[in-house]
Amino acid sequence: QVQLVESGGGLVQPGGSLRLSCAASGGAFSIYDMGWYRQAPGKERESVAIITRGGTTTYADSAKGRFTISRDNAKNMVFLQMNSLKPEDTAAYYCNAARLSFGRSYTYWGQGTQVTVSS
Image 1 (cartoon, one colour):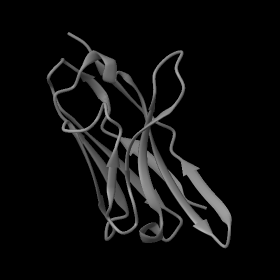
Image 2 (tube, rainbow, N blue to C red):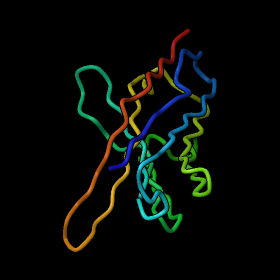
Image 3 (cartoon, rainbow, N blue to C red):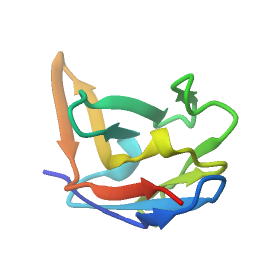
């Protein structure tokens, strides 16, 4: 069982930056693919950025060029650096850990951290 705790959300003006952090415990962090997802009111949860256990990153089109996902396996943490924030980035952001083992999927979610982009 992996526990995930996000931090770093808050209120920021358009064009500003935030760095989200996710601390993991309870499992072998390095074997998980880690991701950041977000959910705005009235919308479905969507993938923002993913970093595999091997370090390969993928981004949603909306995040490309503005967001950077990274991980520190020594500290069991994953980060999302968000720059040039826009009002449409306003959402609850969730950390996710996922892996496949012998055909079985394991996925864990944090409680989320709110990001509000507004002037």
